[in-house]
Image (cartoon, rainbow, N blue to C red; front, side, top):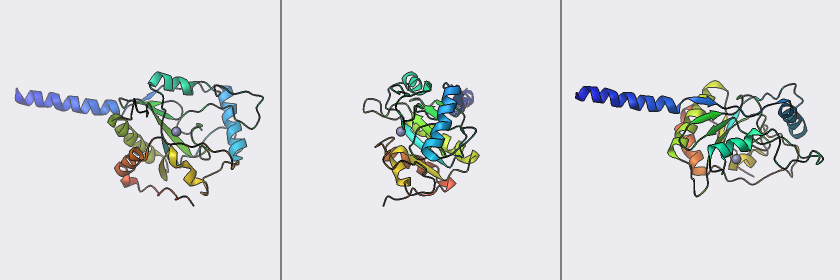
Amino acid sequence: MRKTSLIALMAIALGGCSVKKEIVDIPIIFDDQRMELTKEYLLTRYELDQKTPEITPKMVVLHWTAIPSLAKSFTAFNRPTLPNWRPDLENVSGLNVSAHFLVDQDGTIYRLMPETTMARHVIGLNHCAIGIENVGGTTDMPMTKQQLKANIFLVEYLASKYDIDYVIGHQEYTNFEDHPLWLEVDDGYRTVKNDPGMDFVEKVRNATKKFNFKPVPTKK
Ligand SMILES: [Zn+2]
């Protein structure tokens, strides 16, 4: 009897594990308009003239959405154009923001778009950066342990698949301003970011030390 219950318990534990490591595809809209806007972004922001909006992944950027639910976070990324975009405003790309992955508070991993298609989630580096967004991040809805585990799993998964040199928090992105990977043409185009907090980033880095990621450049 005792043995049976132990086996059952182990099965539950293993089952729980495999659920967390599953990647669920829930694609955002990627129609012709989004395709064209993404190629336009690559051309105007980075001077990369490409037939397809493919990226060469070199880094993983961690984020939080600061939006309090999976559904609302998905909705924010789903539409191809920025909510208040006016096509008559030149020099401002109309491409909506997004990320490749969205991790819910319970640690479920959703893939929103192909891993090697450009997403708009980090100024200067979108041509080489895979983005992971986490639902929440506010005082009312802080990041969870399940999200931490899921982010560690994703970084391991991505670093095993691509030649990833850096794992950074969004708040660190301006440290790359003098780095060869930095391609943003406009020195005035910057936004201040504080997601997803250095505590979270350090925990992910510590758990993935075996990949020997390069240190984030220090700011001059
Ligand atoms: Zn962010």
